[in-house]
Image 1 (cartoon, helix red, strand yellow):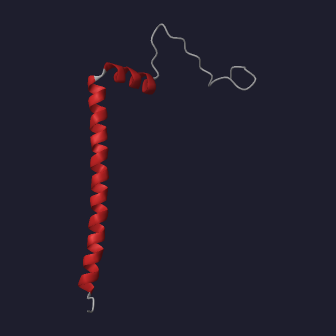
Image 2 (spheres, rainbow, N blue to C red; image 1 turned 180 degrees about the horizontal axis):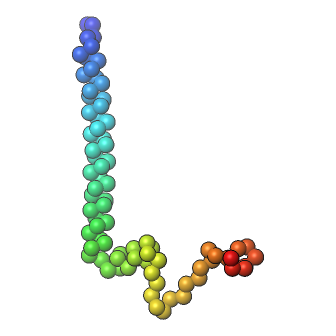
Amino acid sequence: MMKTPGVYQLYELRALYAERHEELVRTEARVDELEAQRKRLEDDPLVQEFEIRRILGYVSPDELVFDFSKADTTGQVK
């Protein structure tokens, strides 16, 4: 049986479909992860506090902050 260009195109389109389907599955899984993260951020005060501290660098009034980023190796402040 001789393969015609249509048969080759069919194989290529099936492979492309499989790739796109896998991409869709990965994207849907990522959307589910982000949705769960959004829900945690909206509903859980501890998660909110953690993210505020992590992203904005907030600390509570009774905490001490040690900032070593401004000291060089000799211990002198720049």
